[in-house]
Image 1 (cartoon, rainbow, N blue to C red):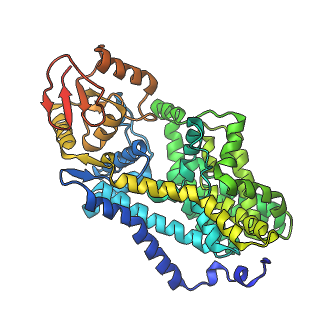
Image 2: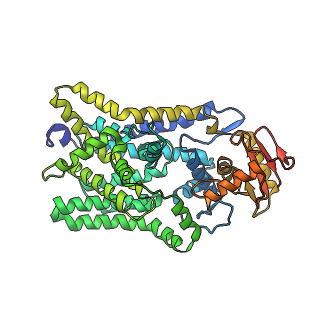
Length: 501
């Protein structure tokens, strides 16, 4: 359909506000439903924690929310045995913890409500932008579920690569980690403001949201929008520059204190290095294109044509966004530059939808277009459903009362500075339920010198080697292979065994 057609002309800002309000409410209830179901199906001797995916990371965010609930505005690294200085990071989850305290709700409840509210905002903004296109429903679906490459089942390396962009972030934010939604809302606010009126205040808010979650992503969309202005709208360069500057200032509110801490707090630099992953050239190519499956291939094929003058503004912006993200993912001097691919499914959707229908028109079959869209979304939609259904009936979704009793025993009988030997999974959960002792091993990114500690924990439990710890904790559910033959446990129930080495 030509860019000036009826549907293209009926842009988002002319739609009735009531329709977006109704859309928002439906999205909120839909996103909250898994948590409500989890509450209903949870066994009576367990508590639900809202785990729907990304087990290791989710418990870290849950613990940070609980840390905020205890009154803290800075984060100490509780996932490692070494005492650490507090840093000005994880503002979002600390803030959620304070909300949990103010409204007297559990951290899990507040995270789930925040995920549902922010997810509904994100989806409403995305739908608003999608309604500017010829195929709004198709673009909407592709932006959430497009691709995931279909290659994860080929080998472990492919699966790992796809996980490196967090399940495309849009889907992962909607299911598990609400801080990703801050980035997504920030990106969409910028694009929407740029397409309509370039409000500097909204750019400032966008930068504020992204700075709270992933400040290193701040160069991505503002740079793409400014490049688009320079190439296609040269008379508005000053206005675009001021809007991008507003986004940068908004981001500095949270990112500057974090950067200052990064300069002089050693554990923060070690943590950042442990989150980095090196890639080969072909793997970068995979991340910026093939990981989005057929939709990604078609989007890249559309880029040269969409960059021509006179094309639809949203498609031009999407093409520049795609190129900017690809260049930054390959060249940015950051240990986690791969994450510039986050939310790349959004411009991919805008560019690939017309290509899909254009190919279908050439062979005179609308059915082909529908089947192609279904094919592009199938893996993402099926894996999302599988993740949700699996989490509702997976024992890892809940935490038993026996485990909580063990955590309470530890907190009551340990001293400040005590350290407990445990597995990654056990340590990761302990931090949420008890402030002491510190786990010797808890999370692959936040446990300092994690690879050495993995080997030492294995040798401690399996070979009886000495380790400078005051406690040893074995979960009967998560550590069936672990044993501690030197002495009887000082505490034991149906969930855990606790020893004093």
